[in-house]
Each structure stands twice: as structure tokens, then as C-alpha cells.
Image 1: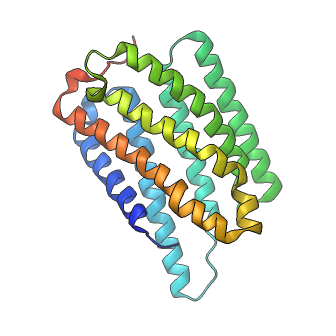
Image 2: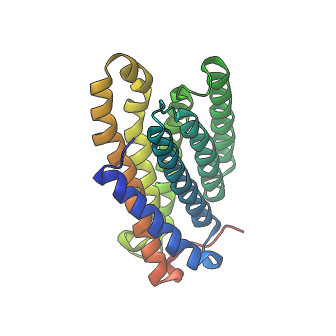
Image 3: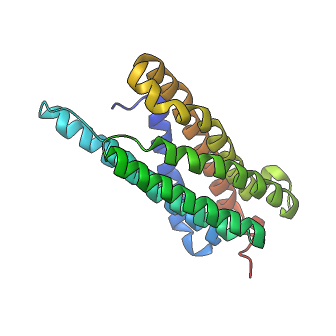
Amino acid sequence: MHLSLIDTFILIFCLMVNVLGYVYYSKLSTFFKLLLIQSSIALFFILAALSHHYYYLSRGQKVINTWIMNGQLLLEMEITFLAFWQVLIARKIRVLVIIANVLFLTVYFWQLSYQGLNEYVNWADLTACIFFTVLATIAFYKFSFESVTAWWKSPEIWATLGLLIYFAGSVPFISMNNYLRTNYFEIWSFVYHYIAVTLGLMKYAFLLISFIILYFGFRKQIPDEK
């Protein structure tokens, strides 16, 4: 594992989101607090994976850090489910959120028990991404009608659009992740470093834009539902 230019920007964007977010944490809606916590988890695990990689590399040992990615996936996805639960308050949609979360956890723990910690739980990731694509689309539609300002000034729209692009774009790659990595490693490496990572960059770039908008005016933030 090494930091590419895109990885470096993701790290910088995550750090900036955390700085802006925690300075004004008390003024954030629950939705943005949860997205902030998710970005903090991502930042922690990126740094943990890098530290783990270079530690074992310096000792001349084989580096296996897939278990770190599996742990990151569980925490990030659960926080994201909570974020959508917070803003999608219609009863039928909340039922969908519950069903999606239960299916994700079922696939996650089944795949983990079947293949162990050192193989990426791609089917669990795929399950979450498919449902999050649907939920992000619903949330984007909802925020588009609720926003009291132009769409490009709406922090909710920017954040949700970033989630939508990331999860929808990740579906094709994640569905083939383990197969490509095992049988066509060069293709997998290219797709991962130039497509999958770029989707992550867009996700955190859009989230950073939303926090910059929040920094300049909290009145543009949609308050928590009562």
C-alpha cells in the first residue's frame, strides 16, 4: 500500500472536513454530525492501514491488512445507515432502511464466517452500496425540494450527491472485486487506483464543499426533524 496523489487528496479532504466539522460540531444537524463521524472513521482507518503496512514492510514481513478494511466497512456503513435514518423519516422509507441494514449485517457476518478476516467482504459491501444508491437518490430528491436556497448553496445536496456518485459508481467494481484481484490482478489494480479511489475522492470533495458552505452560514442547513 502506498499513497498515490489521489489517496493524498482524500486524506487532505478528510482532514479538512474533520477540522471544520469539529470546530462547529455543536451547531451541526444530526445528519452532518453522523457524516462527520463517518469521515473521522475513514481518516483513522486510512492512517491505521498505512501504519500497519509500513511497520510490517520495515520488518520484511508479508503485509495483510484486509481485516482492517473489513472493520472499517462495518463501522462506516452502520454510521451511514444512521445518517439516512435521520433524514428519511417517512415510515415506508425507514422500513427500507431497516431491511437494508439487516441484509447488510447478515451478508457481512455470513461472508466473514465463511472466508475469514483476511478476505474482503465484497458481497456485504455490494449489498450496502446497492441500497445506499437507492437511499441517496431518495434523499437527494427530498433535499432538492426542501432546500431554502439555490441547489449549489445547499450543503445537504452536495453531501448527498457525493454519496450517490460514490455508491452508484462503486457497484460494478465491488461486484467483481475479489474475482479480479484473484484472477486479473493488473486489471484490478488499475480499476482500483484510477476509478474506485477517484470515486472516494469525489465523495469527500463534495462533503468538504458541504462543510465549507456550513462554515459560511448555518442558516442554510436544514434543521433536524422534530
